[in-house]
Amino acid sequence: MPADVYLNVAVGGVLTGLVYGLMALGLSVIFGVVRVVNFAHGEMMTIAMYIAVTLFAAFHLDPLLMLVPIAMVMFAFGYVLQAGVINRFITRPEYAQFLLLVAMAIIIVNVQLIIFGPDAQNVQTSYSYDSYKIGALIVDATKAYAALAALVVALALFLFFKYTRLGTAIRACADNYTGALVVGLDVKHLYALTFGLGAACVGAAGVMLVLIVDVTPSLGPAYTLLAFVIVITGGLGSMPGALLGGVLIGLTEAMAGLLFSPSAKSMFAFGILVLVLLFRPQGIMGKRSA
Amino acid sequence: MIAQLIEGVPRRALLLLGVLLAALSLAPLIAGDYLITVLILILYFAYIGQAWNIMMGFAGQLSLGHALYVGLGAYTAAALYVHFGIGPWFGLLVAVPVAALAGAFIGFLAFRFRVAGVYFAILTIAVAEFARVGFDHLAWTNASSGLFLPVSQYTHNDLWHLRGSPIMFYYILLVACVLAFIFCRALLQSRLGYFWRAIREDEEAARAAGIDTFYYKMIAVVTSAAMTAFAGVIYAFYYNNLFPEQVFGIQRSIEIILAPIVGGVGTLFGPILGAFLLTGLAETLTSALASLGIDLPGAKQVFYGICLLLVIMALPEGVWPWLSKRFGLKERNE
Image (cartoon, rainbow over all chains, first blue to last red; front, side, top):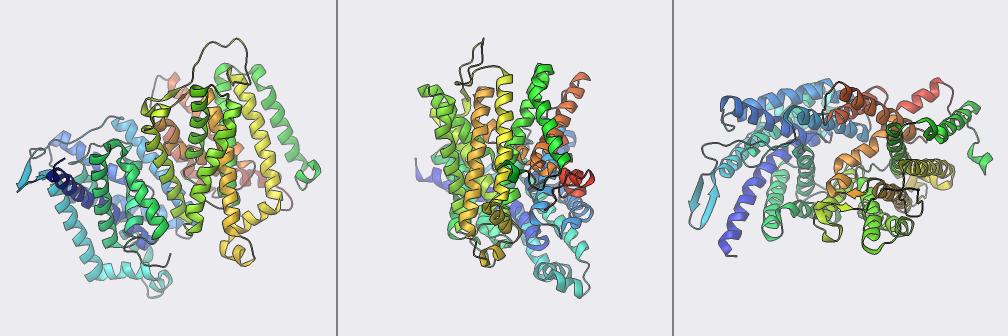
């Protein structure tokens, strides 16, 4: 195979990986602050994907235009979920929180199965088959737009946490739960906000992903697992780590799909997970504490 | 030995167990074909739930990948039968060590490097998924097109080759459940059982008290994996077809953990009660929907999800601890 084939596949993998990274960023933010492992993460993403697909089928609304509205809907969903249910579980054992979200995941997948059926659905936009040619490099327009949007959303999130008062307050909750309570922060509200932000991230990632992959209900569990692989690889709780992990996994999957078989690509992602757990359990960018 | 096993158990709990066992032993005399298949499912989940409970309920290690051990057991025995004509009971001698090795591999990876809690759970899922994708490409077991065991009309039950009527499988699983129950009771009363519970409650404290936590956690994983593999062998010879997606899928692993969680994690009767409640109610729901002419794939799983949600929110200990307290069936020394 000529070198430019490898290069093209690698670039496609990196671009898809950035969208994966945004999805994993949501998981990482939720874990970093609320300390809850969101086992329904991929399932939440498929909710956003189905909203995007349905809006497109019904009103021909371009997913890229619907990015912000759908992210806001997912934010509200995440806020209500945390404020209504998960907040009661903060003091419960880790496995109880985990199982709570496992239950949510089961319900979401199968309600989707009942409503939308098992068949794959997708979105065909006017630019679905466009591509940019840069020298020998051919870049799919959809992947480029999706990756760009993922970077913008991720950057906005970084800036929010770094420079706004609300972002600082949320980081305070993450650093010291009791301390945050003592200085009078409304921790439950901030937790709900954080879960909402995480949901908005994964929602935005989902909207962009409908441009790249077809959506089925079974995508949910697969992407939950992928998000875990990414954040553990990058370092749970580290925001740059999530993006970096996403790119690494996206690249690995693309190369494995090219060199072996597309259906075997997830094996390589799991292989990376095992290697990371073995040699660097805190992840590439993670701090050594857990 | 029996005296030791039943020590501290209230008389009415023993009586209840006896009645249940008698009823289950006699059930095939009156139950129709459909009811038998439901009871087989219940016993199957009760047995695997018991095995899973050793890891989570006794030693506190959450495994979300138990489908791995079912699948390895099922595929090993089935492949030996199809390729070499090796019967299931000899196949078991290979299948159980294969699954135990897989358990040891996961345990070694996790416990050596202090991968614990949720990380451990994710590792178990990842290995099961790895196996699913791997078997999807393994030509020796027919990859994704599925492995089929030869089937014909059976005039008699051949216990040696596990070829026969559902009633035969029913009794095999019933015996397995009874043995697993007794085995787990004995485990809980042994030093091992106390070490496990010490690790579950506070691993640091257990280590400080001189318990080799790595070693005892390894024993928990390997025991649980080996027990689960037996259910896999039965699965293969009962259903006669194996597909990687069907056998190793994460939804299988989740189905396995539902019964013990709903029934009561760490209790001996929890997995049995949970299996009866969940599978019984879900089958009732499915047949009720079917009689209304509604066919909703996924309805059963939504029901499972809601049950799990309700139990975690309202009865975090599970149904059995609550029931046993209410009806005075609780053991005195616990």
